[in-house]
Structures are given as C-alpha cells and as structure tokens.
Length: 285
Image (cartoon, rainbow, N blue to C red; front, side, top):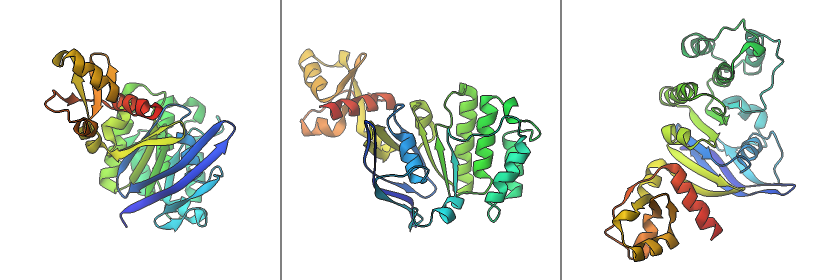
C-alpha cells in the first residue's frame, strides 16, 4: 500500500476557528512538512487525526483502516511528539521510558532504544525531567516516540524554541531515520527553513484551509521570482497584479505566466517564504 495515511474531509469548529474540510495523503516512507503560522490549525489537525480531540466530520484512514474504529490498535504503530507531552519534573528519564515501554511492549525495540539513548542522543537516563535543557528534552521525547519502531512519526513543532545547532541535529536525525528505517514522518512547523531542509512534500495551512499540497521539487519548479531591474515599468505593473512584490523581486506562478502569454523573463529560484506570501495574496484576492 503506497499511502499510509489518508485524511478526508476533516472539519472542526470551535469558538471563532474553523478547520475547513481538510484533505491530504501521506506516502509511505516520505517526509512531509506541515507549515503554517501559529494559530493556523496545525495542532488541531494533528490532534484530530490522533483522536486526542473530537472532530466534527471527516474520515481518517491509517494503513487502509478507519482510525476512529481501531484507534487503540493503530495508535501503537504511531509515534507522536507534541506540546502536550507533560511529565512530573522530579521523575527520572528511565522511569518514564519504562512506563512508555509497557504501553508498546509488543513492538518495543530495546536494542534500537538503547542505540537512540547512547549513540544518537547521548542521554543520561538517571537525570530528572527538570534537569533537562529544552534541546535534551526534545531528544528524549523523540527517543520515546521512536523506540517502538512506528510506521508513522507525527511531530508537532519539534524544533520550536531550539537553538539552530540543536535544530539541525534533530532534522538530520529525522532524515536519517526516514532513510534507514523507512519511517513515514509528518512534522508541523512555522519555521520554513526546517521544512525546506528535509521535507519531500509540503502542505501549507492558512487559517484552517489548505492552500498548498505538493511535492517540494514541483513547488520550486512552479514558483519563480523575477528581478525588477530586468524588466520595464509596464511589465512590473502587470506582474504585480498576478504575483507579489518581495523587496526587489516579483514572485510569480509560472503557470499563470503561461496563461497570460508572458515569456522570455529572467526567472530565479524562490525560497518557501516567498511562495507562501504569493499563495496568501491569491487567497485574499
């Protein structure tokens, strides 16, 4: 089966926020970045998928099975790290690991867990939660989430608040895990640099709606920017209507250029932030 997760028509409304009919699929063994500003609905989507919160409508299939109907069994094949992972400050790491191990006993891999603890993250399991830095805490949570060899690893803002060095370490480890173990990784972030580094596919959520769901390579082939010093004033005004001005460049969708019969321009590579600005403008229009 090529698709490990299929989200169909997921909707959730509370107070003044509305998750609008979310649809996407995750390919087995892939890394998908789930990007959006704080408050866009990323955590709501993830918590709905995992049945941490109830959703109003929609269907979620994991390995072809209904997640809602088989959630207790299916959750054992998923690793999850979110901002709601809470532990008592005075508890030692080894106690927490043993507790989590009991929950996943039939799938737990002692050898892999020890490899993560000693060789990958260099953790001291005799330390207490309160003694961990933010970076060490993130590494410990990843150890717990990966030690039962999950088919799918879901991470909600795993690099938020970490310094750049630790962030890069975690991203490299995630990339390595996906390559060597074939683990499917779905991680949310508002940090576009992190998404660009390791994601093969990018989903952009804005105010409860998906504006982009595409392979990264296709995104950067589709969207380009044009330096304004390479075009005349008439072209600038026309391109500003169909694109978005970012400093001294206009970001455009190549498909729109083709539809407008605009050719022979100097097209340069964009960064993800610039693409998101254009998509947001298109939504507003």
